[in-house]
Length: 256
Image 1 (spheres, rainbow, N blue to C red):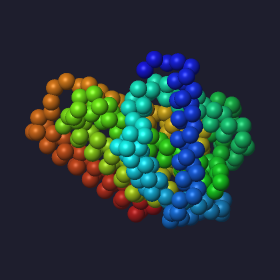
Image 2 (image 1 turned 180 degrees about the vertical axis):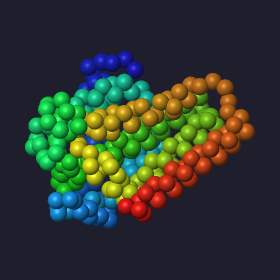
Image 3 (image 1 turned 30 degrees about the vertical axis):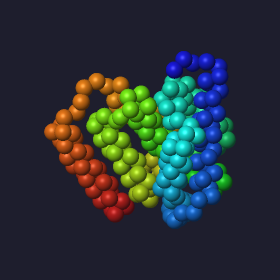
Image 4 (image 1 turned 120 degrees about the vertical axis):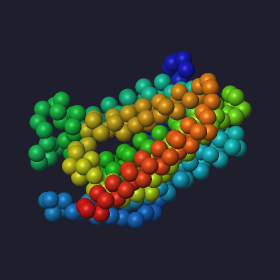
C-alpha cells in the first residue's frame, strides 16, 4: 500500500475509467423511465437501469476474477491511492459543477455555500441526471470493495471465515436491494430538493464506498471465530433491520 507516482496514476485512471464506464452503461442500457413533475412545470426523466448495470458489473468482474484476468485484491492493495484519487475526482467534479452551472432560484449565495451545497438542482449530461447517476458508482464501488476483502482473505488464507461470509451476504443484499427499488430514490429529498454540489458529490464518490466498507476491512485478517450462536443472532438482527428499513421506505414511497 505504498503510495508512488505510478500507483497514483493507476488509481486516477481506475477511478475515472470506472465512472466513465458506468456513465456509458447508464446511457446505453435499456430501462424503465419515470417522469417527475417539478414545481416550475418542467418534467424530469429518470431511466431505471441501475440494477442491470450493477449485475453486469458484478458478472464481468466476477468472470475476470475467476478466469484470472485480474484480482480484486487490487482494490484492497491500492485502497489509499484510490481514496486520494476519488477525493481529487470529487473536488474536480464539484468545481466543474460550480463553474458550469448558473445559480438557480433560491440557491444559496456566496462561493463557499454554492460550492458546498451546489448551484444547480439536477444537472443533466447525455440525457442522464448526474445527481441520480452518482449513486451508481457510489454503491457499485462499495460492493466491489467489499468483495475485494473476501478475495484477499481467500488468497491469503485459502478460506473465508464465517464472519466474512455473513458480511458479504448482508452487504450484497443491501446494495442489490437499493438497485431493485431504485425507483424510490426518485422521490427522496436528495433528488427532489438538494442541489448537486460538493456535499453530495463527495458523499457519493468518497464517503460511501471508502468508509461504509471499514467493517469488511477489519475482517480480512481478524483473528478468532464467530460462533454459530452469534452468527445466527446476527442473521436475525439483519433480517429484522432489513424488514424495518425496507418496510418503512415502501410506506414512504407509496405515500409520495
